[in-house]
Length: 410
Image (cartoon, one colour):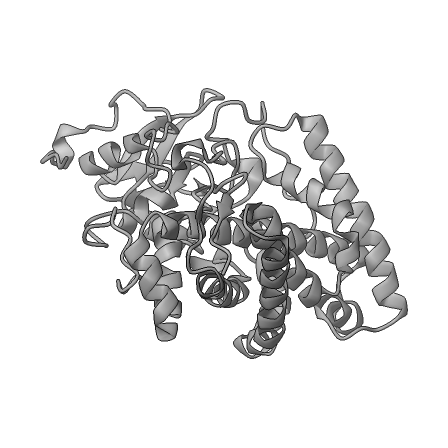
């Protein structure tokens, strides 16, 4: 419902809200309804954080995009207040070495410059052939096992895991050692002890790998960095762990949640199945519509005027990427999944200097995997009621924990 409130109707001393997290039952693809209600009243809302801080919640597309691209807002963890209940208490520690998400320029610039050349469109195209092989292999395994499987375990998780391992030069056989750690780091509710143990476990694994890359050159991203850059061992271990964790979880959830969304929209699924040229455009729309990386936080380094409000130095702003991607002022009929929509400009990969480094890899993975799955199993459908699919409402990356599917054997 639209509300015609001008700025004067919402002074800065309005009672602060807490971030809406409750998703509407039966609407697994929609952001929490409270976000849209707040966005209808104005793109910036006073927000009370669980630790007592009063900052802001940004829900409008233009405000969120503007803050993401503004160097007056910091990404440093130690300056931010955590927006969700049950999170860390007290100030957050600074970003671990190599964790680019929690850095500002110039530290961020140095790492980004080193890595940007490694994630080139050309390199991704070279990986496409390998990705098509991996996808076909996973589909073959599903077909041999027969109808009835968890799509997350059988298809959505292995493909990005194999690809990031291939890109970085990580032995896929070691995945048991790192997947659990990566999963723990992406969850919203681990204890500080669990989070620390997962971080240490991932670091120890990467340290062994970096030592091997230093002693024997290899033709992969970590091998390149080990031989050709001025990174210290600690920096290389940090970057390796950061890229590994980031590359595993987000795309796996886009594949699984994207499949779930398509199965609920049979006409859209049919179009993607029958029109190979539609895939790149369809992927952008799914990234907009689902926005699995749903929330981020920035902190003002100085007073900033935005949309008639003053965000004061030191105030944290929680950016709801999922609300921004459903802003009707930017995307008409935003709650409709329309694979023919021109969804360019969505914030599914963020925006600005922290825009997702692996976005080209993710695009390639989604563009290959989703149509291939729909073509191989034209009768693919859920094996349980849609309302029983377990959703990742407890994770920093949204999606499904499991997606039981079945199909008709030919």
